Amino acid sequence: MASIPLAARAEAHPNLRPLNILRDLPAVADLIELSFSDTMDREGQRYVQDMRRAGQDDNFLHWATRMAESTSLPLTGYVWEEAGRLVGNSSLVPFRHNGQRTYLIANVAVHPDFRRRGIARSLTQRSLQHAADRKVTSIWLHVRDDNPGAIELYSELGFQERARRTTWQAQREGSAAHPSSGVIISERLAQHWPQQEEWLQRNYPEVLTWYRSWNIPGLRPGIWTWLQRAFLGYNVLQWSAVSNDERQLEATLAWLPTGSETNGLLLATGPDPRPDAVTELLLHARRALSYNPNLTLEYPAGEAEEALRAGGFEKLRTLIWMQYAGATS
Image (cartoon, rainbow, N blue to C red; front, top):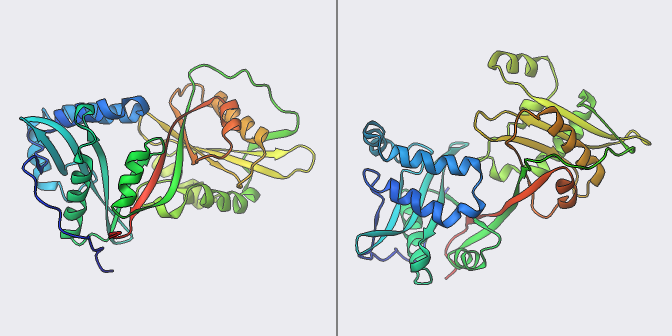
């Protein structure tokens, strides 16, 4: 596959330079926290803390200087300085999927006192040039849906929307909702798998699997899947919601431990799910996993929002995933 052309090579600017991980990480962490703290989940908070700790770890820093282009960590990027003060950042995170190299442009942040001066545009253009120089053919970024200025900027630079995803987080307090008499919740049955798989592929699209490891095949019923989970010590819980009157499958829900502080739920539904089925599944999962206060769920934006709220989840953020499609001019 040919590399994606840019309109022109990004112009050098005296305030723009490559990220120096030997000294920049703490300042970058501060800037990211300042810019995104209002929608940062627990994993994001831990990410910032890890960045600060890494900036003080000499062994990590010397290793990172050799591995920056081959690890899925934000070790490469560009910063903007004014009078010795770091006020802008753009990280480049490399991924490899199906033999193809992919770059995620992340953490594009500018200090509030320095915004609306073209700094974010310059940082993003330089990041695009970095990827083009390395003949990377797939370049992505994500942006909050409530940031129209950034969305316009990225569209002007040649990015196109590919998906819109909302992250939901379980509320600390329990929900007062009452069970519905029209829905039966049970363990997921093997005969539900074909419909569940179809819905999962809709709700968790292939286009984002380079970044998200949803492990949908790990939910498949069967002895070999069970043996694999047992061997890896990988516990999975799954439930089905079936209508009480017609015995029709309405939705499924799976819990997959991620090894991090947040634990993801995979909700499988059609485009217009039965609201009380979704709500009852979520309430059931929260009761079953009451020992785990950090449940999260990612779902197509704008769908089943009232049902998700009734199930005790609150909207954390909606991200627009955009892929670079080439220069627009």
